Length: 181
Image 1 (spheres, rainbow, N blue to C red):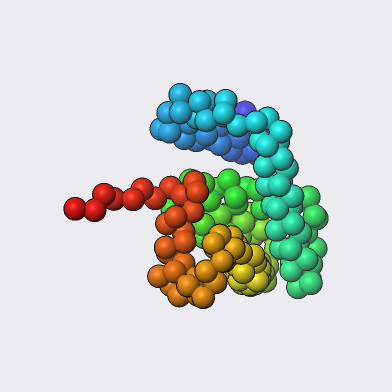
Image 2 (cartoon, rainbow, N blue to C red):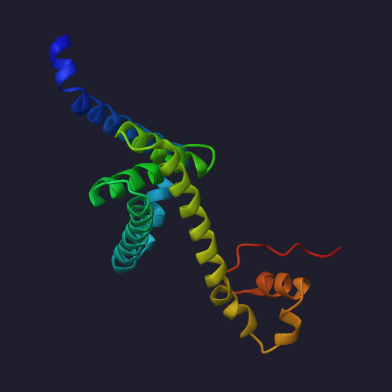
């Protein structure tokens, strides 16, 4: 039995990891309330759901490609599929660990377990985070366009109070106005 476990260690660990992932997913659904989850899913168009899942898959694949390129440029000979697997494992872990950094720690641990240099992998994760933040900063003005085009009050939108006022009055905003007095 011990010999079999030693020979099939990776398969056993993957199976246990998959069972753990399924258990965590079931716990998450139970904590959220399956009635609310399925009620929300019934209201979503299947086309929009599939488009959202496709967008998520493309986004994470591009992020994995970015990390793969960083690793390869540092001399780490990691297969592309392995980089994608580590990225998705890290993303999954980020849903259960206290911070998003937890997913990076899982990626780092996975890369180190595969025998890659810890310092290079850590540097690539830091660079990946910085590049991602730079990308968000570049995309920030695109997210502000609806704020500036709602009623033409462009000058008012440049102030912080104007941004909060516009966000407060956006259709579909989640904030509820409190009755005065």
